[in-house]
Image (cartoon, rainbow, N blue to C red):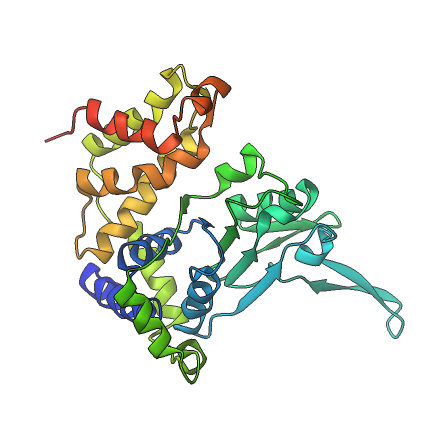
Length: 314
């Protein structure tokens, strides 16, 4: 698929989501770029801002795409996500019953309510697009995009995501509140029926796969490779940072920048695209020292400082 054809597909998908989710154009584009790059996204926001609706709208916008939702709870088991082998008395053998992780789009709702054991069940799948169950590896076909949500203000009965789990998410962002006018529009849209219930697909499953393949062809110059790596590597020299970003962050920054460039109608990456994505891609991977946290320092503020100090290639 050419870049122009990819842009047309990306525009159709973006317009479809925006018809359901009001006032979130910038965030929607970044999330779609994350999916097109083959990554996964963590949505951290207060309840009621549209996280689940966004996941549903995305699934219904792609014809033929499968969608599964898992409500994470403290009593959830790894087999509830991955699947398990069931004994079939007719054949006197075990038959594998796939879990909800075998899907194109997986909504992991309130992921921080599950135990670390369950959270770790997603590690291999998110990093390698496969799941090892009873010693056998099962490869994932299709899109496989994980949208995980968590509530940042409620900590009772939750388990903080471990650093290794956070590092598997290409991007972390939030929707936030919309303006009053946009909220009035939401009321009007849902006065009789939720608009997501009558959505029709805007692109096909094959077009989405082709879009993901086209992302890999977007030009990412050597100068921008050095620029992206310098931003990530600079987190390793900050006294406020106990655990800095790894090369996985550099890879995620490159791939999401390539994907976002297609949504912007280009077949090459600009420094501005890297700057726009840097905080979403890097900040959640940083573990800050206690002193830095008490001083009000955040991962996003550190990335913002780095973007101001690191020279931009021309």
